[in-house]
View 1: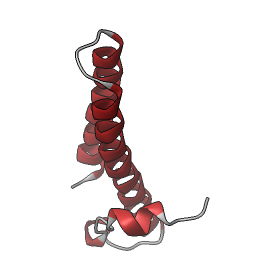
View 2: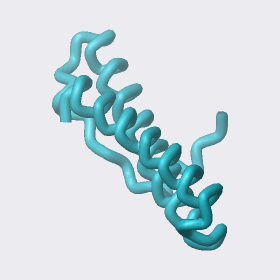
View 3: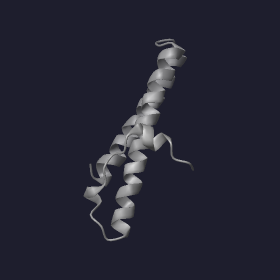
View 4: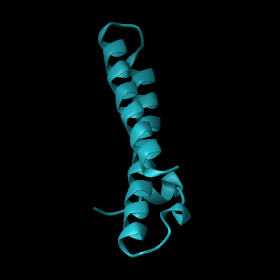
Length: 81
């Protein structure tokens, strides 16, 4: 994925979050379903943000950003901020 594709995916997932919250508020889904799906979205968002940072770092240091790869969610979730 290139930078624009990553940003488009992030935007799409943020819209998915909004729809889930709206669906919960309108009673279309229960809170368990919302929490499960939000967890999936949050993990994928973390992976996308990490990939974007990796691509930008490679570009900044004169490396090929296409060599950056998506890291497993277990690894990305373990990062300390």
